[in-house]
Image 1: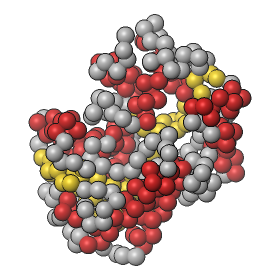
Image 2 (image 1 turned 135 degrees about the horizontal axis):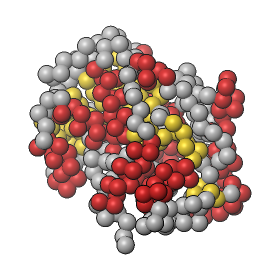
Image 3 (image 1 turned 60 degrees about the vertical axis):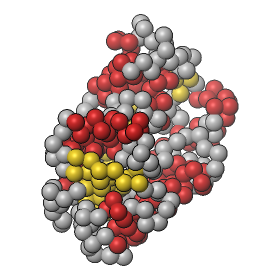
Amino acid sequence: MKTIDKSKPVMVTGATGYVAGWIIKKLLDDGITVHAAVRNPDNKEKLKYLNQLTEKSLGKIKYFKADLLQNGSYEEAMKDCELVYHTASPFINSVKDPQKDLIDPALLGTRNVIDSVNKTESVKRVVLTSSCAAVIGDTIDLLDLPGGIADEENWNTTSNLKHQAYSYSKTLAEKEAWKMFETQKRWDLVVINPTLVLGPGINPKSTSESFNLIKQMGDGSMKMGAPGLDIGVVDVRNIAEAHINAGFMPKAKGRHIISATHKTFLQLAQMLQAKYGDSYPLPKKELPKFFVWLVGPLQGIKRKMVSRNFGYQWLVDNSKSKKELNIKYIPIEKTMEDFFQQMIDHGVFKK
């Protein structure tokens, strides 16, 4: 049980990321100094949304140059910090080289950050942003579990470099973090395992896959129909809240599945229909599984992924997050409306 001193700075890796933005907002609002580790501290355009946060908050932000693949590059940013948030890890669906684009940044990045933690005496706790992809590989895997529901005891055992490489990268990275944690006694490790994160970004023109998915619902890409995929979904603001509580609640420990509910892509689109359906070409039906299986490879969707995930329900147990991190989930209807409206307000959909 570690108590974190709020007068000390807090380090956040991947500070310009989708989830990190909301974590930083909450830290700044609480008057905390944030040590933001970024690739290029001189890129004013990339940092402008974070800088806007500081103008309206009690806390302050200091930028540090750091590279996931470079050992030792986080040590300066970590100096004097008791709490470290490691959120940096690529989330991209279409990759040319899974090892180079996904595995290396996730695995080596985690190793490099924790190496720096081991060298920084002030650090008491690390909060790692993992994923439910490290809990379950394919939705069909749930059929082998009691009641068909996954919890924090489960690990993804079916992903590999050729199948679900992103999920594999998250699994390897989280396992590495736990392995390194076991070799010492100074700092705690608390892990956040979100499902698909949705909701408005601090940067309204984010490049996250979540942003691309909802954009496709409104720009006509899914006019023919939505893929029949059932997924766990959660509001980005709940994810930030989970990170904050995992960092500052002394009793927080272990893994935490953070998921509000599960929905198909069509159900998500239907939440927007009443308010936006007349103005935007939202999908009104679901594409048959055989059709996605047939044409999926043309869109970069592998047939094995379709056969093992489409048509099955994604069910995970979120009770630990409610009980131990005090998460009260935002209704996904509100998440979708806030997200879509932000895109409209910032001209994402070209008329």
